[in-house]
Image (tube, rainbow, N blue to C red):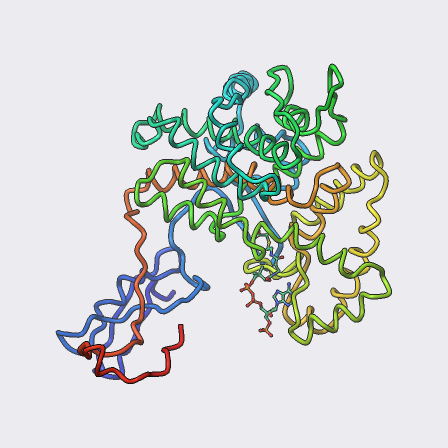
Length: 436
Ligand code: CMC
């Protein structure tokens, strides 16, 4: 039986170092003892974009990207999507265990109670132009809530921290609905305590002048399932931002705004909106081969395909396809589905995609469902941010309670000039500007 350690020989000095392995990994700090001489800083790992660096230990979400497995607190995503509500899953992510019936009732009551937004929120929104993107409005409005709840700075006071986490989870749909209504020029709709999390959200979005808007139960459940699928995904770009900003001990509202900003990019949560634009650009099935050829020659990407961790079918995409069938039975098929299915079929057989293990990810089909449910594409990333707030907060609290964590501060490998002196301006000759 071998030892749980790694031996490294420094060929510059012929010295051997034995680094312990914990859970199969070395600690990067252990590399620092490897030095050329006493003045040497020591060896670091160079890892742009964190391809092979674990920044934390976490008990929340498990992904096996090669086998297409996703679990929250040990429970397979497929089972959670089938048997639980979004708020049940939120409780699980935040507390580590599924709630009992009385615990769930108390939790739902609590989240329901905090849906209302302070009236000043309307004033923040009035400041935006009529055509402002709802995701950008959401990011700014979440940050602005920090001005309303100043107690949110007490992040090490458990009661205060938990209260502000609940406020965020409760108010995200309300803010999202307000942002959407603002972009349409419609009056805001206040939350209704008699409705479930998703029914209330749909009412706040879609209610017009009818005395009572009733969300279709199949669509409300489909949205609930989509929220479950998006609730957490371990250390992705936005979660890393949440943890990084959180490590400076900033309050949860501004941390969430920063995480949402990271989510808005087209390579992350913004991809669902881009998929719809791509399907519009392709237009008909006949244009698919030409589009695929364009992607293969490096002119654009197949949006909604590929993942840093999944090198197999994204398990969320499989559940989304099933959910799509339920939604389309109510709304009628989104004509873009045919193009998406054909695109997927061709891509999964094409050597370019097969070789690179590029499969549909969560964003490939979600937009098609959202559009069929009546959401405009600008809302798609907002619909991602609402449930992901739960994951961000669970990860943020785990960070705050982890004694090993400190302020996040990566190292760099400096490749610029050695020290030089400033030449007086009249003596300077024009130099080619250093590449930025
Ligand atoms: N279309 C065409 N080629 C692709 C794609 C794609 N969607 N994704 C990756 N590739 C190619 C890439 O060009 C590279 O090729 P080569 O080895 O010849 O240079 C190879 O596959 C490996 O890609 P990578 O860029 O090194 O992979 P990454 O792990 O850095 O990026 C990704 C992951 C998700 C950013 C990328 O796959 C991508 O841009 N996909 C499209 C955007 C998208 O759908 N994003 C949503 C991700 S899932 C939900 C979420 O995180 O929010």
